[in-house]
Amino acid sequence: MKNATMRNLLTRSLVLPLLFLAPGLALAAADDPPSGEAALPGTEPSKLLPVKDPPSESPVREVLHTSARIAAEVGAMSVTGLAMGLPGAFIGDALCRNSPGSGDCLGGAAIGYVLGASVGVPIGIMWGASLLGGKGTWTGTLLGAGSAAGAGALTGLLVANDGDRFAAASISALAGSILGSFIGYELSHADNSAPPAPTEVSVLPSVAVSQGGMMLGLGGHF
Image 1 (tube, rainbow, N blue to C red):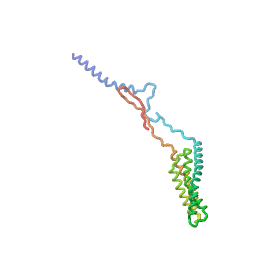
Image 2 (cartoon, one colour):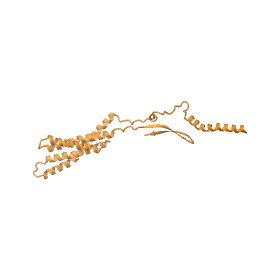
Image 3 (cartoon, rainbow, N blue to C red):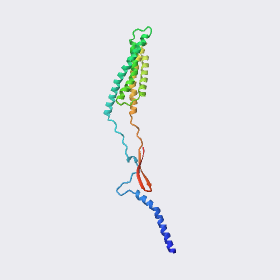
Image 4 (cartoon, helix red, strand yellow):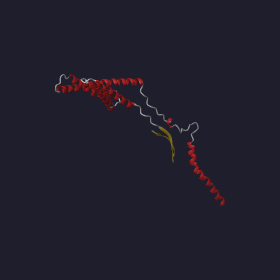
């Protein structure tokens, strides 16, 4: 009787460790890759899912597109400059005629035209560029036009003679508005056309163990 009891205790003591070791042996067997298959790499996760940058536009096509956009800007600028200059000429002529002791008001009309055209220039540049998909901003264009027109007007006042200062300042303001509008628009366009900074992408294999078995997948961080 004692021998049978001892035999049962020994058998149970051997069976219980095997029951505890069985899940670990099954997991170890599942983790080992089959023969002829390489294990998933644990390092350099980016090689699992290579991220390629979008193809950039060819240099020749980019130059042609830029040239066409600038041509559209010049054409639209001429239209809006004329459209804003004519009201300015009428206003300048009317102000001159209503002034006491005024003589020939041709100069007043010309100055009014120049000032009106200076206002219409940045509007035309934005309009023409938008027709060909330009990415410039109103802020950049108006800042460039205003600062350059102000610098031109100040230069005209300082350089010209006493009798021609106002006319010189108006013409210099128009030239500054044209140049500044182009520069401001193109700078903002280049800033908005720059490719986005590359983002860090990591992809790692993931393993989930449940009562029904094991699941193998990929986990990514973007």
